[in-house]
Structure formats: C-alpha cells, structure tokens
Image (tube, rainbow, N blue to C red; front, side, top):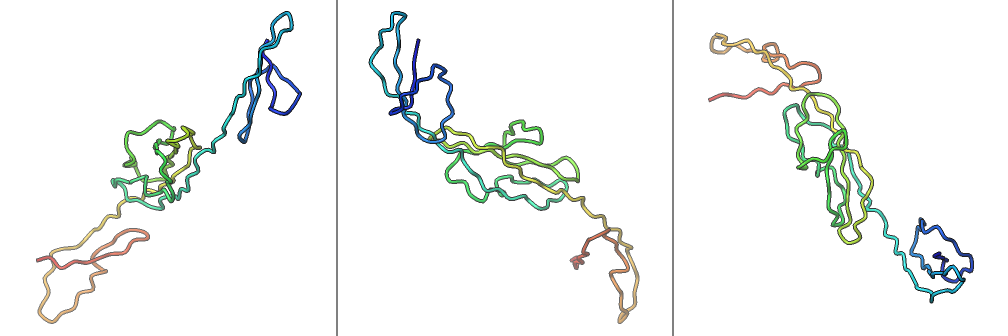
Length: 168
C-alpha cells in the first residue's frame, strides 16, 4: 500500500485525493504486505491562484454593429483570454455581432500562461438597441425669407435625438 502524510504530521492517509489551498509538502512511502517501508519521498504541491479578471458590461450597442468584447476587460495582467457565447461555446474571435435588439450575455475566461490555471467565466452583458427610423417629408417649396421648423418634418421614435445635416 502507499501511505501519505503532510510533512511534519504523523497522521497518514491512503487516499491520494487532496485539495490544498496553499503550497503543501507531503511525504509518501510504500509499505509492502510484509510491513517493510520504503524511504519517504517529498512531494511539493504548489497551489497557484486562479486568474482574476475585472470585467465591465458593455452598456449599449446598436443593432447590426460589431462589438469588441475585449473592450469589457479592465485588467488583463498578461492572461490568455477566451471568449464564449451565451451557451458558453467557444468563439473564434473577440468580436461579435448580436443577431437582434435585446440583451445578450457573453463570457470571457482567463488562463494564466505560466501556471496553466483557468479562471471562472466572467459575464459581459451587452444591450443591443434597435436603429431608429426617420420619416422625413420632402421636397418642400418655400419662399425666400420663410422659416421652416425641421422637427415637424421628421420623427425618430422613442428616446431619440434628431440630427439635421445640410446636404451639398
């Protein structure tokens, strides 16, 4: 059989499944059926922390616009980043174009290239807004010196701001 113990501790255990949360030193030895013991070997289990990303939601995007998910990352610290869709399927790019107006949750996950540790999925929420429609009344004939109130000629829908541009 094989016996394990935490170095400096006389209690032994035979189940090699452990979950240390800091660097821990173990000793292992083999015991034969006749009771003979091997020399102890030292095992060092170094525990690395999972990568921690600070992520913010991307507040708004317009429908049919490409969104760069990496703009949501506040700190990267040299991690390798992977991006995932709403179902946590791996994306081939950090750029997405949500399919319709609404709220979408994508995910980013960091891997520490030194330790190989993988962080938790971090959500990136995007609110996709529909594109407002403008209905303009045109062409209009006016006489020199007359005034036109443009806001009466176009509607942009709820929560929109109309911009007018001089053509030509």
